[in-house]
Image 1 (tube, one colour):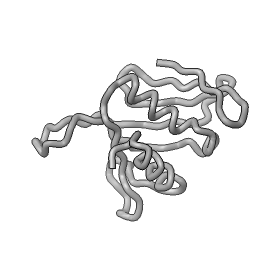
Image 2: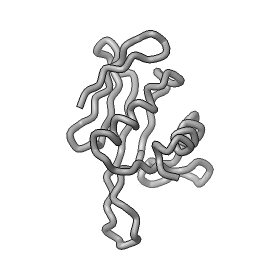
Image 3: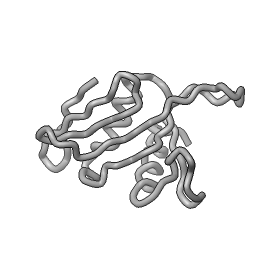
Length: 119
């Protein structure tokens, strides 16, 4: 899946999601400027949690604050229809890489508030 996105900086970015929904790449002029990695998780341990995609890596520093990250997550939900989850900050390093650092906690908090990422 590909989507051309006109960001708030006036530039056009291409958002590409692989067929499995595991990687979202953001390019500008053919050059990679960021990506998001996700891990599909099902209820294999019978906890009652819904099938979902869990964000394990946020690397959007080169294009932050432009609405691109939000559009990436919205597009993923439109394409795959599964809830999105994410880790938390301040709990140490997660073995799956989903702990939040840098601008990640504020970004994910905003996405949770908007209902794009599950609380």
